Image 1 (spheres, rainbow, N blue to C red):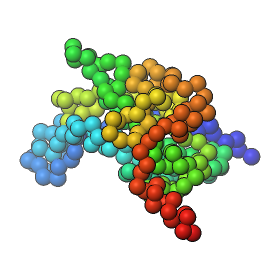
Image 2 (image 1 turned 45 degrees about the horizontal axis):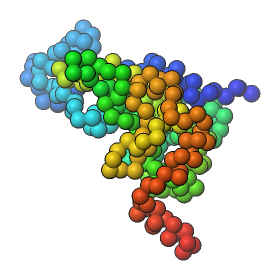
Image 3 (image 1 turned 30 degrees about the horizontal axis):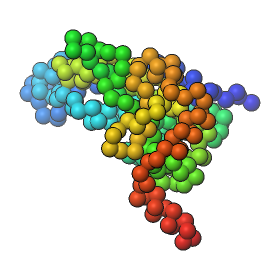
Length: 255
């Protein structure tokens, strides 16, 4: 019998080999002669840019994060497909998780993998700081997290049905001058409770926030010493009740 892989360590190993690899958005129309011949990928990008094919990726954090998340999930799905008895399914854009992994290769059960992207803060001098520009959102606190036994729209199954929950954090520096926008991308794999703070990541939404210090994210040094402390604190937190929760509870009562 083949020994199962430790998913957290496996993810770290795969993520250490990931490269962003996007030089911008490709525009079909261009101004150059065909056929186009390039000696390598750098030369190809240079020629495409000179011919008007390359448009810059968006700088807006949420839009750029979506581009990164799609690429990272696709990369991990490709890596999973090379394993025996391992399966991966991409989640919905606004659901949880971004990626669900299952199969005997990882000891069975279902594993929730969420991709979180954050921009490095920049000092007044223009140099990157050792913190994220804004706090990473770990969970939506007033829906699937608050009610782990209910299945919510945009989820594969109830939160409590997962054997493990892991986050892949993508930390990058914004490069205004590059069409790909992303520089010095670092991927960090952590269990969410290990990097959680005691603050929401938004003043207007019911989101559970992570610590902002990048060394603490790398080391898993959040505000809680144990998973139990984390879950007790945040499940007691007085979030606003989401309308979808009211609808689901009403539906359960009618059944």
